[in-house]
Image (cartoon, rainbow, N blue to C red):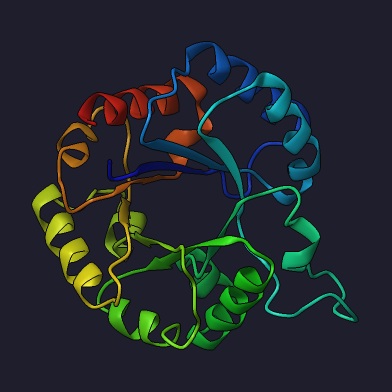
Length: 233
């Protein structure tokens, strides 16, 4: 069975108490399905607490991710959080998100450095790319050997004007991205998704899953998206 993914990126939202309430409610609605991996990326301040709390809830097929990682190892890098520092708390890490590139001026080389640190620490990278730069963004990562990697495609327009890319177009782009990689990697789509518009995306065979931003902040909305993906498997 080909694995599918639904990834929640909370961005700069939720403290520990809010995060615990989210997971407590989500646990009441969540029904695990074989072949579907749920990944939630809370803020850094929540990771240590949630790594223990989520295990206590016994949520199958659900993992945590870090939203970012330092391009440097542990050492004299004030304010940085190294991959090695979170490897016992998360299984995945988001790298190269368009907001990191836009607001923090991160480059393809920064993304490559972060990916190398993540892979060395045993974390699975969720590498974000956007058009028309997807292939050049991935080219910078070609020399890094990552046996497991997820590509998260999110067109910039869908993030700025909050209109999702048409499902057929998203599937075509995902196919193009996957074919440029050897071996091919799973490609998930993200960009202004919500429970009302994901139904046409979950049935696209080119898409390995969904990368959900704002809609993941509400546990009911995110659970509804997960349920639709589960129904499509």
